Image: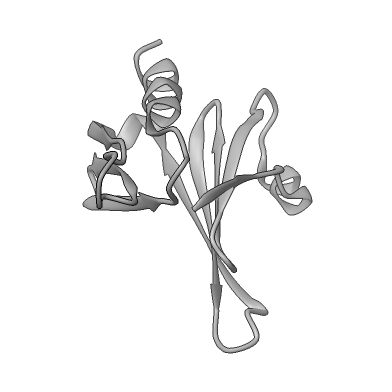
Length: 111
């Protein structure tokens, strides 16, 4: 994943008082962090026209961890979320600051 501008179609999903904070993308999928939840946009099929939207309220996150990339052969960073629904692992592209994720998640969960 790499950081990207917040996609316009996310605005249609937001409720009153909810604001998009940051967005990250892969080639076809994206994850948008708001002040209330994590929105995952998952493009399906060969054309990517079918899109599944997953919404993870921060209240369902019970624990998280972040791992930054090392200086040697470790090229990726990771963010892991343990939720009431299960375990989610997000691999980040080299150069993305995993500590930014940690601070973002902490700010919405711990406040």
